Length: 322
Image (cartoon, rainbow, N blue to C red; front, side, top):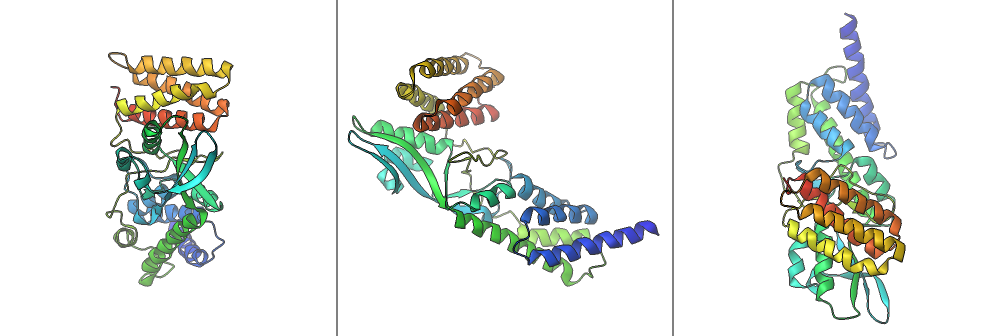
């Protein structure tokens, strides 16, 4: 008897609370999603729990990313010639060598946890990079003449675009709860089958999947810690070219740090070029290089290190050195 009363109270509280709070635009999405986790547990719906957990914790490399998490982007480039440094120039990929085109996309999938998206949405503009774009930058830079250089290349989108994504997630939740309460009193639990069907109908992830993933936001806030960029199309040889780029740019670093940087690059190269590379050793040496990037303080060099480090880490995770 006590268990039945408790179950009814919990059910009414969850459904009523979800329905009432969803329309309050000031209510954080994370709190609503945690209620969905509880509702999924009460109804036995693994589908609802899995979806809510992915939204809260971020989507993994092998997870299909919902269409509503796609964002359009433009390319921003910082370039330098003998006379001037130009920052934030918006370009199209047709301005790049054709060898770069396959590594550049017009849209990206956001795999980050919902609370990180909310933080990024507060910015006026957000810049992102990933290993494929770093490779395109290196190819473009090599094609230029003397005294010309591509200092950085990034995807740019507006904070309002991310706000739009958050709004779509809230709308998906409203539709889901409306479906669940249409034929079920607030004092009763929807059947597991009913919840699963509503999740599949409203939140089904069988549509388009975007394989290029945003990894790192420009500035101190790193996003997508749990999301790993696809390395599709990037080989170990490509990653080594990114490492070559780091070595070429070492001249921009202060002398003491330059020596340490060259040592770290040489150690990493040696670990990769062994007959049977040890994945753990490669990842360890990539970590040393990544830590150097945080200390060097030269944006162009740090960006080059970041691209090479990210590419090599993900190749290691995907078994490239086994």
